[in-house]
Each structure stands twice: as structure tokens, then as C-alpha cells.
Amino acid sequence: MAVIRDKMPAFQLFQPSSTEEALGVLDRYGAEAWVLAGGLDSWDWFKDRVQKPAAVVDLGGIASLREIRSTDGGVEIGAMATLREVIRHPDVSGQFGILGQAASKAASPQIQNQGTLGGNVGQDTRCWYYRDGWSCYRAGGNICYADTPTAMNREHAILGASRCVAVNPSDTAPVLVALDAEMVVVNASGERVIPAQDFFIGPAVDIERMTALQPGDILTQIRIPSTWANARFYFEKARDRQVWDFPLANVASAAKVNNGVIEDIRIVANGVAPYPVRFIAAEDAVRGQQVGDQAADQAGQIAIRGVNPLAHNGYKVTLLRNLVTRSVRGEA
Amino acid sequence: MELFQWGTNPWGQEILIRVSWDLLYLSFWAGIAFIVFHVIYSAVWLPKLAREASSGEGSAAVAGVPDRIERHSLAARLFHWVMAASMLVLLVTGFFPIVGIQFPWVTIHWVAGVVLTISIIYHIVHSTFFLDFWSIWILPADLAEAAARVKRQLGQGDGGEIKKHGKYPLDHKLYHTSVMLAGLAVIATGLVMMFRIENALVARNAYLLAEETWGLMYMLHGLGAVLFVMLTLTHIYFAVRPDKIWLTKSMIFGSVSRDEYLSHHDPERWDVTTK
View 1: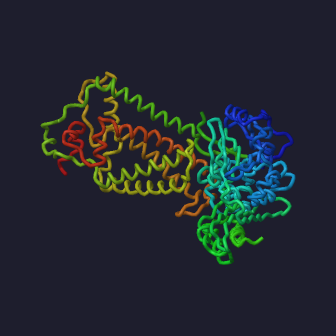
View 2: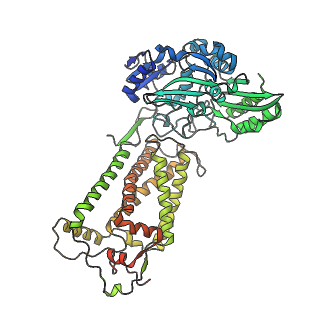
View 3: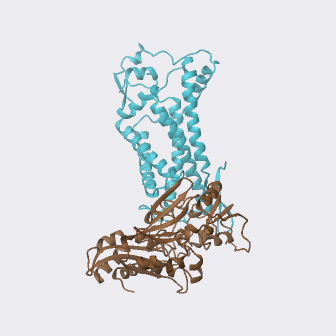
């Protein structure tokens, strides 16, 4: 087991005041550099001495990365905006209340004041086998310690696993996928804009990363188009401790409902797979149907097709089905 | 450069993970280096050397040689191309993610591995019972002959005649042996590694082997696989060389001409007149 120590390994701390300056440091240190946002994921890694970067680039001093503003096409949120700022910002709450709702369910108020939106979507999995520093698949090894008959895998994946069964723990990630958000990523070579759905990647594609971010990359901005502004939103998070905890499962849905008919809908869940899962088949099935039990039950049943529960997380199948059902029904 | 990757298990013990991917790059560049060397060798040195002995025209064995000689049956060619396709898919799906080209590769990889395995089983049965089994194996006579060829190339030969090849020259036999060894390594370990992934054929069981043994499996699989990078590069190089293209055509169309046969093969060692 990894031992938490009082002292972290030594590293060079950089506190740039501009994105360009930060990129320069990242370019110089390559894979030896670590991007620090709110620090809530990072400090665990450092204190456990599992991650030992040579350089830490603290983005906290880059004011432009904290801006939240409305545009003609929607809302742009700086990746370093804290969860609390996202919750309270009128442009966000006015059009995309579901994002603030999800952010308010992330951890505790103290953590929401420190944690950032970029950090919340970019955080690593909480699988304890992985975070304890053992040589599992995700850490570059050749085994998943959570996917064995005697493993502690109550919190792990029932969908989308490929060798590694860790889940993505973000509460805001499924909302951003549901809202068709775009992630703006910059590095020394330039800027690229990645749809949120493609930003989160599963172990089948890359078993050592949860997002498209590579060494040298900085997530600078999250753009939410107006496509789903003021839609009928639903977010629900199931967790062991209601005070603050990571999700056992959460669901986010955005629906355009006209005279009781679902004209269009997005349904996305997290905590059940290594990435936020969008249930396209369920969306297709309920599109054009009346909001009600029939459509909701159908969506719930479709969502659990192909699930593959582990030894101790079979309960997530029922949980996921019910969350998706409730999200379509729209009940609180 | 490292040869192996090591990790730590939950008991704090150091465990073997796999071969170091440094070997992938080493294998790639070794293949390129061999090709560059061979291009220079072929252009500079080879023309200065005496070629094989006389064509053998007029000997009794030549009299009955037909205009076209079947070199590879349809069954053998189908095997070769199925194996080649599956091997290329395995190399792409196995190594592209390592060099940074990411895509969902696992399912494609194991399916291609199963296709390769079936094709190899077919080949073993086919070559054992329906082909000239010993024609591809390295025999003591081949080694003695190879030594004579090397001496001749170094100008140390006794001037005696060195016969042309039978159906397969020594370099083909060496390549076949290398592919066989590397192939058996990746196939045997790959089949066991099926127990580590979600697939339609066997249920996952990470406890099938001890951790150290799994490490050995991954290491052997990786070692065979990186060898295939070099083997495949050199094979493709020879397949597209102008002076070898007649062999490549024979793997597509099945036959060689009488002239090609007489220029490269000894009718007494590969008798085609009895067919």
C-alpha cells in the first residue's frame, strides 16, 4: 500500500501569469511536467508519492483562464473557473442550470471553492488499486487488480471496460457531454477544439489516460453552445455519503419537450464506465414519444443493455436503469 | 536502453511486466539498417561475384521441364496471404497505439490473432501431409553449402562448383525458421493472454497463472512481436526488389517460368518433371 507522507517529493514549481508562459514550461519539461489546476487531485498523487513530476505548472495565476462569459453562440467558461463560480454565474445558471446543479453535487462547498471545472473534468480515476501505485494496466502494467474474483470493485465499471475497469468520477463531465460542449486545448503547436464526447476516452483506446489531454496540453476553455439552452434538464447523483462523495453513478439529461413530446434528448451517465456514457440508442428510442412512464422505462431498459457487472457492483445495473428512467421521466 | 519493463505488485515485489518498447524501435531500425546494407551489398558487391553454376540446360533432368512450373499451390497461396494480412493487422493494432496512434485496437487484435492461429494450424497440416515437408527446413547439407558460399564470397573458396538451390534457398529457410519461432511465441502466449481480455471465446481469468508467469507471457509475446517488425520489413523489401519480383509473382499467380526455374533452381534438387 502506498503510504501518505507529510512531505511531497521535491519539484520545480512554476506559477506563470499567461498561457504562453505556461506552455513554454510544459514544452521544456515534456512528460516530466504536471499541470496543476485546483490541486485536489494532484496533491493526493504527490503526497502518495505515486506521481513524482520534475515540474509543476500552477495555472492559478492566469486570470484569463477563469473568465466566464456569454457569447452569441452560448457560454464560454475558463477551465480555471472554480466550481463555485460556475454555480453562481448568472450566464451559466440562466441557460444551463444543470451544470451548476452538477457542480454543486461535486464534493463539499470547501472543495467547490478550490476545485475548478477544468480539474473536475480532467481528474483521474479514483480506483484505489491504481492510485496506490501498483503496476496495473492504467499505470503501465499488465493486470487490473480490480477485475479479479476477490477484488474490491463495488465502485467500478459495468460498461465500457477494456482490461481496466476504473470509472470516470466527474459530476460535470456527463453534463458537458449532454450539452454538446467543446473543449479548447492548447499546446506549443497551437489550439484544437475537441467535442466533449471525444475528450473523454476509454481504456480500449488508451488505457493510461482518461482524457484526450497529452503531455504539454492545457485545457483552457469549455464552450457550451446554445443548442440546449433552457432545455428541460435533469441531473441526479447517487453516492454513498450525501455530505460529499464521488458518484456511484450519476445521470445528466437535456430534453427539448414540446406539448409533452420529446423532440430531442441527450442522456449521459458517469461513474458506470471509464468515460461518460451517452445512451444514443435510448435517445433514439424515446425521441418523438410522450414524456411518461413508457418512454422512461424503455430508455432505462435500453441503457443497461450490454452491461457487464463485476463481482461486487451488480447493484449499479439497477441503479443505472433507474437513474436513466427518472431522467427521461423528468421527476426529481 | 532497457530490455524489460518492471513494476511493483501489491506485496511490494518487483515483477516483470513486458519487454521494453525500446526494443520495438531497435527492431525497426535494425530492419531498416539491414535493408540499407543489402541495397549497397547488392549494388556494389554482388555483381563482382560469380553467379551460380551453369543453368543446367541439356542435362537429363531438364528435358521434361514444362514451360510453367507450379511453385505454390492455390491452397498454399491462400494461406500465405491470409497469414500476411492477419500479421499486418496484428502489427498495426499492436504497435500503432504504442507509437501514439490511438484507436480501439484490442478486439481487432485478438480477432486477427485467432485468424493467424487458424491459418497456422492449417499450414502445419497442409505442409506436413500435402507438401514436400522437408523442402523448407534447414538441413546439414544447407549449412555446409552456406559455408562454401560465404567462403567463395570472401575469395577463399576452392573454386569448386556450388550447386543451385532446391525449391527454397537457405535465406528462405532461415526466414521461415525465424518466422516460425517468433510466430509460435506470439501465438502460444497470445492464446493464453486471451484470458486477460474480454472476448467471445474464453472467460476472463486473471488468476489462471501466477503474476510472474503472466509477466513471462507478456514478455515473450512482446519479444516475438517486435521481432516481427524487423522480419516483416525485410520480407516486404525482398518482395518488391526487382530481382526477386518473380518470386512475389509466383506467390500471387502460383507459377514460375521455365527460364526462372532453370536460372535459380537445380532440377536435380527440385524435380518438377515428375509432376
